[in-house]
Image (cartoon, rainbow, N blue to C red):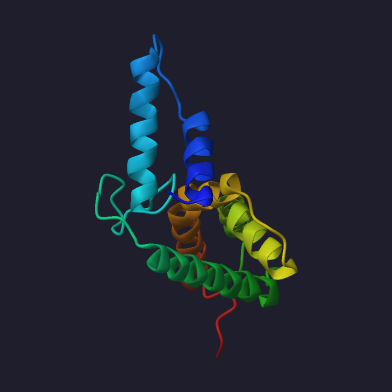
Length: 161
């Protein structure tokens, strides 16, 4: 086992949640689970399908590609929203609040993805905790981005003519 894998295993086991009444065998179970997850590709694997119970996990390359696609999609929707005239009389206050709420939800869900992208763009090292946060939040980020885009489409906001 490489030093990196050992570090990730130790880090994963240290953060593994234990239920009440945990024993030494409970710690061994948590360590085993972490070894299994590391073998699949990290402490927090991401299922291929939209079902969180799906056990067909993405490979590292598939995850990187999905993260990049999600990041680019979120940036396109953000740019579209920034360029849209939301003060238009055709958008009432209720729809404006709907857009603002959806934008806020998308920004919250995508915060870790944006953080990791910024860190990598600066050449900073990214810790395993942030990578795992991105893995946990990536599907929510994609879903919230699609939701905001759907709202903008339905209201015909910021579409190229």
